[in-house]
Amino acid sequence: MKTDDMLTVPEVMAKLKVSRWTLYSLLRSGELASVVVGVRCRRIPESALSDYVTRLREEAA
Image (tube, rainbow, N blue to C red):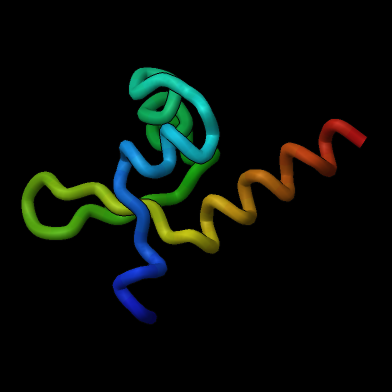
């Protein structure tokens, strides 16, 4: 996996156009997967974001 496949919390907030609180709620609930790098660096794989958006689209259909 390349490191450019990993997004920061602010990057995902901007892509989804949601608040930090909403994003962390998605992460806590397991709806959106993430990893912790080191002690406090949370990263969201682009594939996890893509899967989440795909699920939302399928549910809306």
